[in-house]
Image (cartoon, rainbow, N blue to C red; front, top):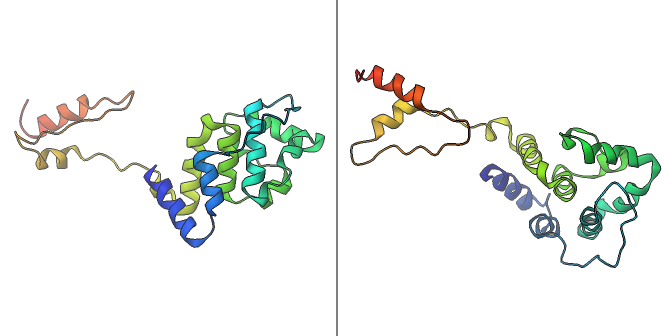
Length: 177
């Protein structure tokens, strides 16, 4: 998340992400689109209203809601809506060429919010480099050297993480069999 904020701040400062785009990414549209019925059967009402919000956020999204209804583009949009990796599927040619990397992220947030983290990682990797999305390996020996009996090492674990084997190896290397 920190790397994403850095990448987006750099692009905002350079003028590559406008204030309206950034505001829309963070908050969505402030307009009520409930008067506009969704006639596209493969997206939800929320998705459709989100597309209308994108159209007002930046001119690059012009007529994107119509693209979803277009028979030629609909197959591509359906693939994106059903894919496990929607960001890996090229958009219909007009939008593939027209939208910036950040605007594609805005679109992903609108259509497939559950896949946004994949898109954020790809965005950061593209804008700053792969090293900004990779976690450095944890140096348990260094952490042990920095700790004392009054400044312990605290582990914040994610699901599936198990530091026990590393702790046992560290204890053996320090002669604490």
